[in-house]
Picture 1 (spheres, rainbow, N blue to C red):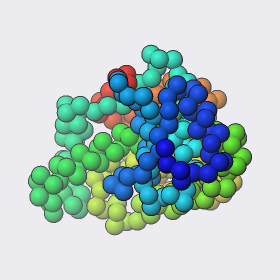
Picture 2: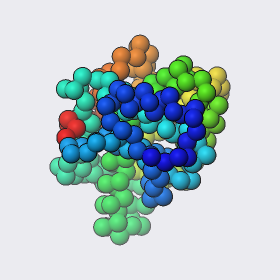
Picture 3: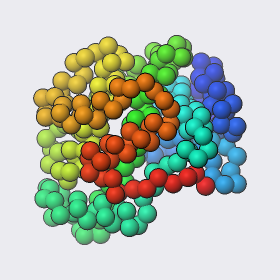
Length: 258
């Protein structure tokens, strides 16, 4: 286990370990394309792994708290409810087929093999974004309400994450992304922005999304988070509803952890 986190993260680590029944390993990976991820143990494995990008190490206490939140939610569910999104080759082909027909700036500038890899990355990334955001939103309030010593680093991390998200509204980025992917992903970002605005009590954070026309779809998605938090099984239900709203319900399947 990495020693880079402080004592203030110990409580949430102990809780995740207790609920999951697994040890928690923490490691950095400079190839990671997101801030951090939680890996649940597969058959024959004994540890949950929290992997983070070393560039975000100053937020490690927050990262540990957030990813322990994912571990806690997942293992608090009944065994039959512990399912994860998965895309097989047929799912990915179906997702890419629709996206590849769209007109977008990069479409005719990339070699065919590189274009297919790029589209595959975008499609699989959208599925991860869709499935992770409902629990992400719940976890932030869980941290805020239960782990007071993490609140300051949480606010700083969310502020930086928001600035990264809002940069994606740049017209150049929009031009270089297939329209369907951009619209769906940015509507999900609206939800994250709204969640952050509530948590930090900064209502103006969603103004850029409203200005760029994402309020209607973003609010529709956000409305499904208005009910009382009922845990991981509800996260899955919300992700399924979002998938239907965004017309990606046939892009992935839910599978039990093996």
